[in-house]
Length: 408
Image (cartoon, rainbow, N blue to C red; front, side, top):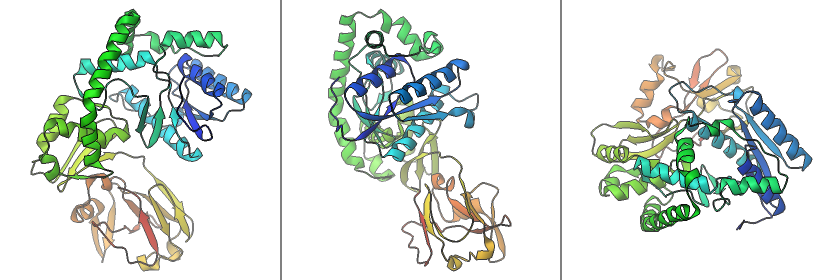
């Protein structure tokens, strides 16, 4: 395993207690890489899920390795029409990102292996979709994290043999033995029947296709160049192939690697729409937004609600504020404790003795749709909304108290 990393830094390891991630666990340890193990318990297999969590935790404790676990039983369950694999991925990577920031990690190790790479490519071919790259990349940057996949040259069988040879404990996920998911069907009906020569032929095909994508990806990277939005007038000048790569460059930090041709073509056709607000679902949590001539990508966020017991300086994921004295915003000490939360569709706000719905106020301000979902409102101890930060493009806040909103 060739690791091109700084071993003086700390990393994360996504670990399920399966044979692939446990093999990577052992290899990283023998390479003297410092890492924190991140495990997600989805409770999909009853006592087996709890056994895996317990066993992995005990193994980490034995080797003096930090262990972080997400218990999804505390999370809101997805609705029946939501794809569970997509939901699980979103939950998993949101957790990884949280731990990544907690430890200021320099990268996340994921145990994708050769069979995963081949499966991903065959699924891409089957769907005939536009993709940012074919197969899986050894290094990528997604969800705001540097991601390493050092096992892409190893097959699942080789990793299981490694575990047995090195006395590495692991558990087999019984759901992988079924054909419940598309990936499993391809694994059992195609991948497991391929010879080494056939696998190599597919790998050569993947390599050639990715070489042909290089110039398109470079163009898209230069076009985006760190921007959070693009004007529809700029997009209108692009052909469909250029647009697809610009879109991928825009969304790859959210973990979207494939979009159907029909979806991309329909989005390109929307560029000249007369509608001022358009939103199109790209995944369960990611939306393409076209608002007032600007195109942005929006990720739905959790609902938040923060309690401010008294005046002071506070910092949260969505905003920073200095309310040591906020009377310049008509917020008095008698209003405390305050609650700062997301706005909702039933909120009302009194402006100069006139009651107005908050949603109408946002429309008047021409606030982009994606911001309306997360924009904060301040509620006093009596349950009345007493302040809403002003929205305006290039708005300059001249208040003495500070209310810095981090939302984009």
